[in-house]
Image (spheres, rainbow over the protein chains, first blue to last red):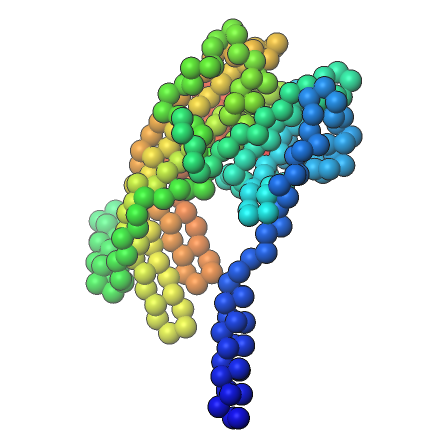
Length: 113
Length: 161
């Protein structure tokens, strides 16, 4: 009986050690599915993706930094020195604030010039 | 000067004799990787717009305060050697490696169209060192963050990071 108890304890210990190494994916595959050229507004973009990492041409162009895990895309925080995400999302809006064009650019790994 | 050289030689000899050398393979320096070794063919002066550039290359690493120029920077370690020392409860190390940098510099006209584009490259040693949790590293010999652009080209100031 004591032996069995020890085995269970060892198994539980091993499981705890192994599970500590795993990470839970927090990304979303459908994070960017709402983006539709000619339809999506700046407000919707703000509401879904929060503040962009940068804006250009008086707010006509937004950029976001994104990472990717097994769950899908995640938005990276504010700018820091060095590149901090696998992707750069670029959104350009028309004068009414409607998405005109967008592009998800891979900036790290698996890039072939 | 001579005393300085002697001290440096003693320090290097001490490092070699006491620290464990660890070979470091080539690795990323944490920069973006989508900067080719030539100006991309899609960038054409008086034709390509700022929006076109952003759509293809993403957010730049440096930008002018008035968006009139941008820099895309890339750096890669070519490998080197690290000297690691441990004594008591502390540890320290020095890394010396070859590094290769390139930066794509693009200037736009007032209409947001490419006026000028050039690619610069440079290879040089990269140093890093630290003791316990404190450390630092050398700044790239080619400024991939574009701080030197305004002075070098007499262009508008860089937007603050």
